[in-house]
Image 1 (cartoon, rainbow over the protein chains, first blue to last red):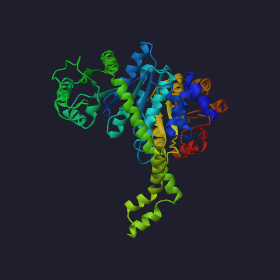
Image 2: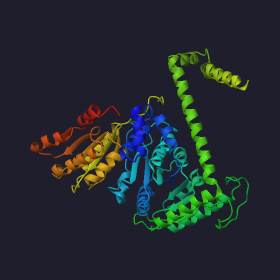
Image 3: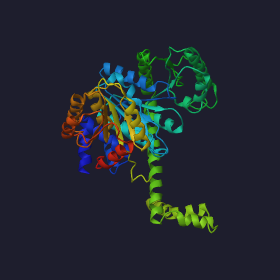
Image 4: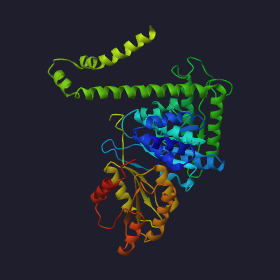
Length: 347
Length: 139
């Protein structure tokens, strides 16, 4: 316990080793990690968090490297969390994003951490959120979270960023097609990386069309049915169209512009009150996720105490009972306790 | 899978330092470690000792595997070890060296804090087994 206390003090005092160790505890869900993260919370809320996602090979890591270097030139400190998939069979992983961090060699003020998509669904977004808190509390000005944009899991991860940039490599229209499934909606900024390659113009054009389509769709928009203008004159109105930026991460071309667009978005978040609204939404999500995980753990505990599921399964197989009845039976005492307490409170 | 139990994985940095460009061995060991269920961070080629120290500290690895075939182990390894010490990371990082290290140089590396040296002919199983047995448990 006291070891963890001093670990937090060391982290807040700016010791890299302590920061690294806290993130390890968060990742491992080690005993005591909840208290650690609880203590961090009070020190968070200052960093600007950018999420970067896109298909494999889109150039995310290289771009993140250049972004970090540019922030550093401006005297800002940077934290990066790069998430790579792990094998569902062995749990092993090769975390390769660090290789691309060539511009920030030996600069401890860029704190780069690789994380694997370990364990279960939902667990990763909690770990990532907590790791971001550690970097925030440590005092990093900018935090970048990088992940392959493949599915719901990744969408959940980048959602906890203030600003989400979706990287699209030039090429077949298929890439843009793929984006429609969920990733399009979360983009605050589109980045067409490798803009020096053939087909970049077309990709930009396709994205632009799609962004317009999104606004035209009755399903679109966080603000209900408000019909929005068709052109990118985004000022003034609350409906905001994600800008499209072209970069060549390898040479650093367009990175300044990207950072300017990200800064614009941060300003917009602030000016419209969207930043607070998103933060509230995030905390609500976070609490819900924790509640789900904790109640699942409570149920596991109860199952273990009852000697596991085997006997119940036997009974179900023998048609003596059924899965619904079993679930009811196991959960009944929990439900009872909760309701009793609630009634006691209300009276 | 219980949340209280935690989800621990052995984290390794497979590092190539200095001018030596032979990374076949490093790739093979990185893959073998991955298949053994470890989380492997590969440094890439031609890294300086400082970079390796930075990566080891930030990634908080359990194991640092340094692959050297250039013969420069006697200058590069001490620099890495000193760097780890500076950040207070040496005592709970298992440092192993792979590659070609002449017999007469080995004792010095062991004294410095290198846990084991795996020369040509070492098997993957042997290396993985060693890591599993010696990785600092108390974290």
